Image 1 (spheres, rainbow, N blue to C red):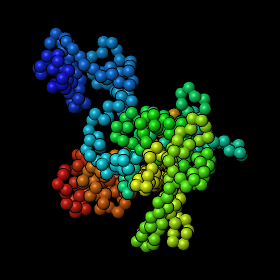
Image 2 (image 1 turned 180 degrees about the horizontal axis):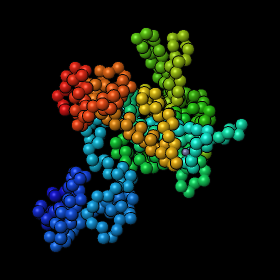
Image 3 (image 1 turned 90 degrees about the horizontal axis):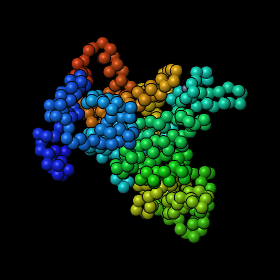
Image 4 (image 1 turned 135 degrees about the vertical axis):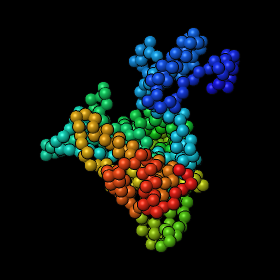
Length: 424
Ligand SMILES: [Zn+2]
């Protein structure tokens, strides 16, 4: 900032420019702030102050509600402010760790999917979703959309912040997955779109309102598009087929055990629904058959990407990566030590969603370590399962005190007779 054209234009020199240090430890913050205020006084006040304005209406990180006479201090930033500011700090992308997740068009794929994390016939709260059964009973549940970054051929997924499917303020109606998805997109697209994003989702997400929202927010999409829920689109396809305007690409593959035949079909600019303002999307389908004609896989997708013979395979591969949100994310969360579906506790109001958030944070933390921490990677690879790894850490930290994370990993490396990597 000191060298910026703007400050140069003000004829301000380095000793006259004071930017608060954002890396002061929490324990020292109060003292640092007092010193900073003293410094301002000693210079006779401020000549010029350059402040940022945020989406929450904050000015210089003074969130709404700050007092007029507030001085330099430590404050808790609104979650929206933190999200907006996150890109200015060193994240996975800045460290180059997202490169292995890059997919068609160099984009990152974000898959959306809903999952349930609490269910009960009796315990409930005003935030529960309710399902009334014919026999007069009610099932109360909490569900959430757990967005993750996925990539074909990559068994890791990066959890992003969840969106809870829960009645919203000012709405009497129960919340639904679609409405929650819209909230997530509206809030998060401004944060992620600069990375180049393609959204993935099942047929439920392949709706005009969601697709239009994604395009408005400069996100791409590849969504499952089934015949039953897209009758108009498939009628158009039938007509195009008669005009021989549906293109086909056939590829034979050897899996190592048998031959499989992939038949890709695609068409461009077909209406998503039956209305005058219908959005035109591009459509593709993959049918995988065995040499005897038996179908072993069939699915179709709608996308905003212009499909051609050159890219249809990549687009289908990205669309299929959606299942990673179930296989690599939700299943791991449910069955590999995180016990996502276990009712950890409902609490009075927000406990179950808080516990779910902790679970997702733990999973994200572990994935980031797997991507970026060499020692963690070595130990995880050495131990047979994720569960063994967790059990070992649980047992060790129950009986032994470790100064820090690194000394725990060093201890485990010694015990497992692993050589320390060069990076610490
Ligand atoms: Zn509840």
